[in-house]
Image (cartoon, rainbow, N blue to C red; front, side):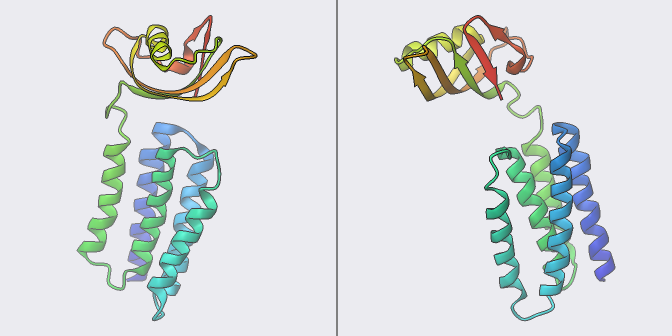
Length: 199
């Protein structure tokens, strides 16, 4: 039974990481992290599952690993979801006493939700970027109007990260929606005289 559990978990994390995450985001370092975390959590949780306090220790391990890894500033929100999914798959498989249909269904549910939630066609015209303007704009309505003109998009929200009146620059986190006439190319490829967009 344990061999079947391990095999199913490896298939699940393989599909999640190599079949869903990597083809969409191409970050090799996180592929290693997701695979390593999943297998490590699976091994530890299978050992803990054989004890009376296994479930509690498993949840504690989940929390500790999450806090340690999420301190990194390099991981983005969609990658947080994949990271938690890899942890969850390992715990579900490792702590399941009897690998029944419910366990299989829960593992499948984790993968299906990420497949749909991170699909490129879901809200495909919505973007979130850090924009650096070569001018200081203190008025929010003026800032939104200026960004809409430069991006050719409907701005839904702005958050000024830095307003530098000395160097005459504005760093703003902007959430916007591409219009039908807007070039669908990623904003990071566009440059204007007073605009730089970074991811």
